Image (cartoon, rainbow, N blue to C red):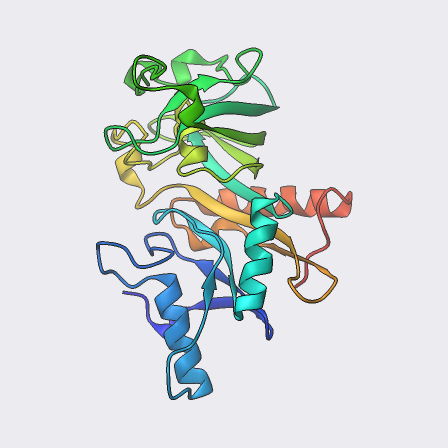
Length: 286
């Protein structure tokens, strides 16, 4: 259980609060009744500010429970309304780092797909690809056990139409590749252009590169079960401040997520610093 004094708040003003969510903590209350970020932060504000009633805090986006990383909350209804609008209009830049099984034969690419609008048999499904060609394939098939991958059905048949699907788009770049005792793996830097449920996990798994430790879309083999959680971390968040006319930019390495090892963190930091030095990313607020 995560206690108030373990909250990792990176930034706070009168309008927004930016925090690092640990893996395994829900973004908001769910059926598990486990402590969630929204509730923990509200309790923190009540105790810290000695409020007599409840604290108000607006949830403007979410991270999957097993995903770690940056989240921003609104502290006023005005800020919540404006920030929600920014997320809907794609004025927010969202970056992730993921450790995937296998080694792609390209250095970077774009994934565009249509995903089911809701879960089918417990999983979000890739209905069809919007890519002109396969944008992510492995040149090292023996290093990626594609025989163990999930086979996603095509749900374009009767009663399942693409009009019910949602477009999902992201860009990716391979940072480094390595070999564990059990498999070959690649560290990916991802810019999420849309925000669909389980999007990154589904799009990568469908192409034979499931995220390490993914119990829902991964291989669930010895290597997956050797790490405690999903190796997916929301590492960057850039958004317009809801009141001030400034751009807020936050970046955080995946050291909070124990499914990434020390070398992953070092490689990530070198990569991010290189992008910042070349002006490829917004100047961090902190």
